[in-house]
Each structure stands twice: as structure tokens, then as C-alpha cells.
Image 1 (cartoon, rainbow, N blue to C red):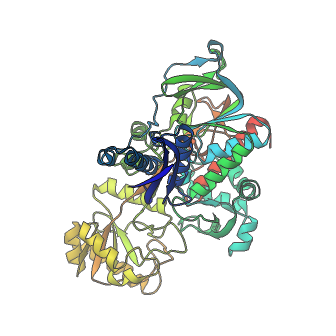
Image 2: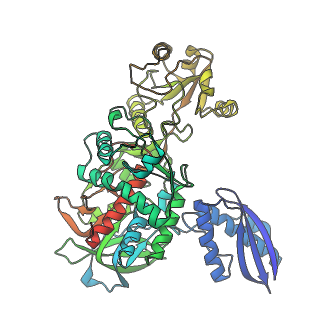
Image 3: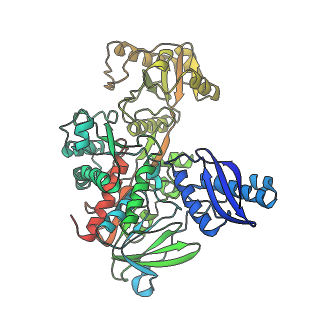
Amino acid sequence: MTEYRAKAHGFNSEITAIVEVANGKVTRINAEGEVPNTIGALGVDTWLEEANAEHSVDVDAISGASVSTGALRKAARMAYATALGEDVDAIASASIHNRPNNYPLLKEKFYEGDLEFDDEYDVIVVGAGGAGLAAAATAAENGASVLAIEKQGIPGGTTSLSGGVMQAAGTKYQKEFSAYPDDTPEKHEAEYLAAGEGRLYEPLVRDFTQNAGKNLEWLEEKVGLKWTSVYGHTEIPYAKKTFADRIHVYEGGGAGGNGIIATRKLYEYALAQGADFQFDTAVVALVLKDESSSEVSGVIAEQDGVLYAFKANRGVVLATASIDHNLELAKDLSPQHYEDVKRHLCWSVASDRGDGIVMGMNIGAAVTGFGGTIDFDARTGNGTDDRLPTIPSIFVNGQGLRFVNEDATYAYGFRAIFNEEKKLGKPTYQIFGQDSITAPASPWDRDSLARDLASGLVKTGDTLAELAEKIGVPAENLTKSVETWNKHAAAGKDPEYERTMGVKPFSGPYYAYVNTPGNLGAIGGLKINAQCNVIDNFGQPIPGLYAAGLNAGGWIGSYYPGSGTAVSGAIHQGRRAAKSILGLS
């Protein structure tokens, strides 16, 4: 037996494939170099399991981690080619083959009496992101037979791309780690309802906030997460009275991509409780009890072009996210999100196309909550964390006029940015000065600023008039906007928008950064009640059908109210849906 090695670049790092060969046959494949606790690492583990079971280097890349596993596949094939004395260069230059993970939904109706089911379970969960994993784990730990079906080759969905944080109020962790020991779920509810601007359904928000802390304890005691700190979101201007530090961070979490830690533990826990998972499989239709009933009794799934029918004896949970990459539905339902997704600025997983929403609508389910999106500035990280105040700066529109509290929570700010840019048909800018660069939490240093200047992302001018000319705004407006800010900021005040952090004057040379959205998904989905039962267009529950997380609408409003909301809500609603199906409180 001889060992052969080759390298290829994955998503996070360079990956080395180590292929053991005996008598011209692959006996074992290992890998080195993938960064731990990443989606790529999970994909690599999955690919190695399949490849070693088949003793082959030709296993397809794993959808959901196609860059890293495609690189590993390429490196393994190169190593094996070396062992056989074949052309390595041809393999090195070949493109990566990815499995498809978007399947066409079926338009026709399916009825239980017309089908022969391939298998049956108490609960079927559609999607294995945060909401789906929580539903599968909760149903299984309570004795139900569970099948979770996922389009990608690995579990986790967009939750794995999250920062690994969750919101809750009145928790024992909040008492230990924050300056808000007396916070309550009622205050949390009040803040969310204010941020919802009258669009939210109070029972959904109340059930979420009342149980969010219990869910964190479940995640620690049962699933294995350890909560280590708590911080706060930045300002929601009209909800300051109900603010508290509520964003809980688990060990290893707190940055983009750290959600994989939670989803991996949830998946392992669900497996340990007896849940079954089917990957690289798409649910393409719901099965109705009969032609005279709206009751859902199963699903139709597709894998490799073959249709399968699965019966759900107690209920189906839809947990397939919102309309993130569905350009047509975004255009119809969510103007701000549409602008992002048509420019390929949505970073949620590619399989998030609102399948659960469309399948629900196909049988008469109502939708609600559309219009918002989870937008933030990925270059600056502005407005994501109250420990990182906005640098001394202002946002101006295409007329050079200030229009928003710059330190407001990120999606609130980007809704204002979207509205200004649509109103005037021009970009908006963050205006700052030379002294702003050295402010705490500045996204720039001398080198990074030089790179952004070279790329054109940032413009500069020794005077405001010069800068105004470069970005195409009226010089008198820009000058007045900055002078007004500086005048009040010198006294530590912002009477225009009541900003409280980073309130300091700034001076030239001046800079203008083009505000650029980074999108982590749409807001809006199927209408549900507090039991997560899907509601039809006449306000009645659809028997047997439940929705959770961002597959459901009405619990987040016209903008995203702060980090940790989506994942915490998804975990809660996944658990709530499973408990409702099983008749548990």
C-alpha cells in the first residue's frame, strides 16, 4: 500500500487529499487543511464517508459545500492519477462537478388514496436548517418517528452561515453576563412589536419571546451548546425604552459562519434521538387526504429523477426558508429583497427558493410579512453590535442630505438606504474624515482604505466641495450636512436623528464610501398561528400542515430587528411545530 498526496483550493483554505492505493485500487482517502467548524469541514467529512464507502475518488461534490468538496474531489483524483501514472494536469484544469439542488415543484395535486407510499412516519420535516433540525430533534426526543428531507447534501442550511447567536430575555445567562439582570420576555416582546411597525401578529411574538430562554436551556442541557456571553444590537430609534442586551453567544460562536456549530450539534442530537434524514432530496409536492379535504397527509419527494411518496401520520413541518433566491417571487412580493437578489447579492444557501411557501400556496395557504429583508453592510459591519459604535460619520443621499440615524440596527438603516436610493435613483454614501479612521471599531486602517480607494469603492477629497463633485452630489448640500453634524456633535448631540454613539465631529481630508448591501435572506412566508399551524386564505388552520422559521411570516416586520432574531425564532418555531403536532405544550 502506497500513499499519494495532492492539493486544491477549497472555500476556506487549501485542502490536501491523501489517497492510499494498493494494487491499483483505492483503499482509503483522508484529507487535511480544511478549517474546523465550517460548512466546508462538514462537507469534507460527508464526502470522505461516501468516498471511502465506495473506495472511489469520483464521488460527486456535496451540494451545500461544493467548493470545498469539489476541491477535495479534484485533489483526490489528482493523487490517484499520480498513482496510476495518468495525466494529472488534465484533472487539475477540469471544472468541479456539482450536484443540482434545485428541483422543479409539481403543479398537480396528489391525494392519499391514489398513492402507494414508500414509507411512513409520524412527522415529516421539509428542510434541515435551524428550524427543521429543531423540529426533527424535538419530535424524535418525544418518541415520534421522524423523517427530515433536505435538498442539499449536508444539514444546516442558511443557519450554518449565521453568526451563532440567539436572542432571548430574562435568561440566567443574561443575569450572569450582561448589565440587564432584570430584563423580561415582556420587554422583549414590546421591542419586537415596536420594530414590527404594526405588521406583526402578537401571539406569534409572545410565544417566541416567552419561550426563547427555555430554548437556550434546552440547547445547552440537551444539545450541548454552552452560552458564554451576551451583547446588544444597535439602536432601534423608537424602541429604546425596551432595549436590553439580549444576543446570546455560545462557545465558538459570534462571527459569520459560526452557526455551523449549532446546526452540527442539533443534527447529531436529532440522529441520537432516532430521527432519519434524507439528503440530496427535494420535496416537490404535498399530499392531501382526499379531494374534499385540505388536510395534508404526506409529501412527494424527488431524488435523482425518481419520485417517492412518504406518509405523515401526524403532520408535516415546512422549514425551507423564505424566497431568498426566487427572483420571480421576490419581484412580486418583496421589492427591497428583489433589488438584492437580482444583483446576486443574496448570500443565503442557493437552495433557499421558498419551496415550502409555494407548495403551501398551491393548496390554499395564506402568506404574510413580505417586504423586508436581512440587509447589512458586509464591508463595514455597521450597526451590527452595540459594542462597535459607528465611526464619526454621516450617511447622505444622492442630493448630499443626511437621512437616517447611522447607528441604527443594520437592516433598519438599509431599509432607509433602499428608500432613498429608489426615491432619487442614485447611490447613498457614508461620509467620514481622516480622524474617523482611527476611531474605535473603524472598518478601515491605512492599508484597507488605500485598497478601497484604488478599487473606487471609496472616494476622497481635500474639501467637501471636491468630494461632492467626485460623487455627484450638490456641494452646498453636502457641506451643510457635514457642518450641521459637526456643530451639534461638538456638544455630543444629534438633534436631527437622536444618535447616541460615535457622536463626534470629523474633518478633512474627507471620504465617501458607497453603501453596499450584503443580504442574508428575505422576510415573509406562510401565515401561521401560535401553534405554527399553517392558515388558509379564509383564516382557518390547514390540518396536518405546519411552518417554522423564515418559511413562516408575521413574526418579523418590514426590516430585520437585530442579530440573533432569525435563528432564535427558527429554533423556537421548529420546536413549537413539533410539539403542536404531538399535542405537547
